[in-house]
Structures are given as C-alpha cells and as structure tokens.
Length: 132
Image (cartoon, rainbow, N blue to C red; front, side, top):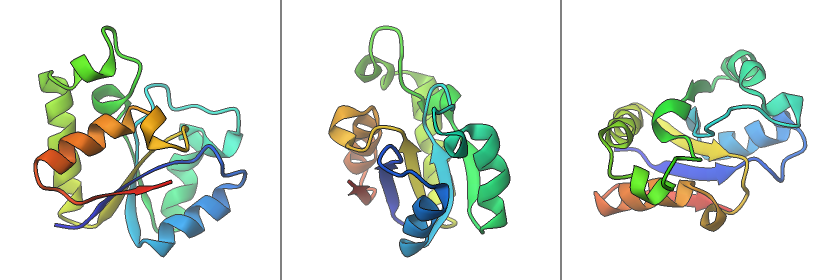
C-alpha cells in the first residue's frame, strides 16, 4: 500500500507552487475533502482543480459527500456512519494504485477534520503523513 498524505492548501497563494509541492511526494491523486469545494482563491475552486490538475499529471477526486467536514452533530460523530466508512474504503482503494493526498483549506491538521480521517486510517494500519 502506498502512503496517504494530508495537507491544507490555505498557505499557498499559487496553485502551481502547491502542485510542485505535491509532486515532491509523487502524489498521483489529490482528494478534496472540503464539504463545499470552493475557495476565495479561484485557483483552488473545484472547477479549476478538475481542469488543471490532470494537465499536470495529478488526478483530482472530490469526496465532499463522504468525507467532507461540517457535519450535523460534529465530525467525530460522523466518523461512525456507514457513509464515512465507505469514503475511507474508497481512499484505501485509491492508495493501492498511487500516493494520494487529502486536502482542504486549513493548513494545520489539528484544526481540521482531516485529523479524524488521518486517525481512522492510522488505526487500521495505514501510513499517514501530515504535511504541515
């Protein structure tokens, strides 16, 4: 199994710099885990990422429905649902093929729902690298 990376794009001003950072870790798939995949920075909006990332050799997958944040009752509670578990299973399947990175806006995982995803993956023995 390949590694799963987790990082926020919030400190990156230019998509090109963010992509170069991803390439450093040989990321083949960028998984967007924002509940609402939009941004104040147009370069990081879903519609832009869907077009630009494949041109640069990185597949873009939006998992806002299964792994996106902002859940009624809190994200920790949400991690107990079948929908969440299905999202984790999908991540693991993608990680069999290539290195993947999960991303949303918050630069620090400890302030983001990515920490719950990373914790779940770690608990089942998957290597998760937090890129802060």
